Image (cartoon, rainbow, N blue to C red):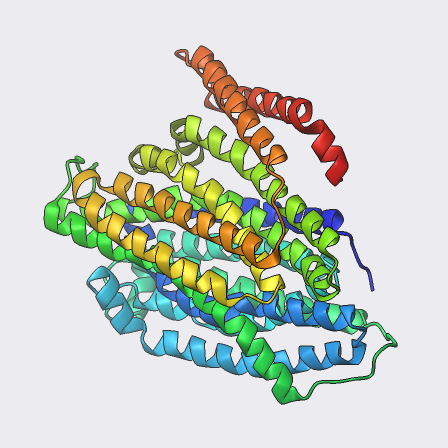
Length: 531
């Protein structure tokens, strides 16, 4: 087996996540420019409804397979690993078929309930196959991750991103350019933007199919290792029960997480429709379309940027899971504490300067990324700034969730997420009528604060380990230094005629240099001890 240590495995996954997110940005940003705020509301409707189903059937899968695989390897039960893989494929392919079929059958009702008409139904139907394809891919990724081989997950993520960006933009761009000729083949559809959104969503389904094909081809040329050890093998029923016990709470937790997107959609469109907004409708947008325009801009722009960094730091949790599982099974508390400290420090090390930089430069970043959608970008600048504390807390809590799964407490994240979602719903209802999208952003940050505090407290209490906070305090201090440097340099560069790219690049580079130097000076002893 090509085992990697914690640092190497996490770096492999994070680099692949960065590449996948860059490809995702290459997809989402031009797509937003193609569809505009209203078109993105159809796209986001499909995604918002699809993600809870996908989360329930797919999200907990890879971590469940990875944990059982790592557990069997730690105990020397190598034959059991192969049976885990086969059982997971049978069990969750059936779940994927059921989930995808439910999404497709209910597409019309979902669209009418979500956006008030049936124009998003085709987009919902186009994304349904991703549920099945995602299940197959998640089993394969979890199998290799449990064996501490992160290369297959990394390569498949990059390949999936390439297919999504290429197919999604080509299809959406073509439909947008030739909408009048194509829409006649879709009776009942009246909005070309909805048709173009469905074409973009089809690219997402094709990318998930591409990941399945990737693992199929890899399986032809790469055989499973022949390992000798403990011959004990669990029955298919025992494995299936353990997989469900591990995956179901994680999946439900992910559903609850994705409910925040549905909460934003329902509360933003509903509250703005009822109470109105003081935002002047931009050219081409009627007052009646403003609720969809504000929600589509928030979901398609602010939340897109918000989710970039957590998707990278999530890889630290995935990378830590097999190591923490092994340490927990072997009762190696020193290794457990070491792996925990590495994962938390890694999450904070990436999240804090990213949040500070995005918060200080939110307007400049959005206008640069979404240069063709200046109205949407300006609307999202302040909400994005208010989302940044929540981004840091999300990065930390998602890492802790993976560690809780590793020590056999997959039930805890679900309970915590339910509390956080209740805070999110109450915050949206209380604040959106008064401050619009900023209220949705602020309630998101508050809810993730509750989630992070609870998850950290429960993990350390259950494992009996004590956190090493010195490196984390150094990160917070260095993040403040970084923010001050970025703000100062950005203010100096704000001159008429200055290049937007240069005005972004120089503050980012100087702020990053200040951050790295400050971390090194303030925590070099602790970092060398943990390396």
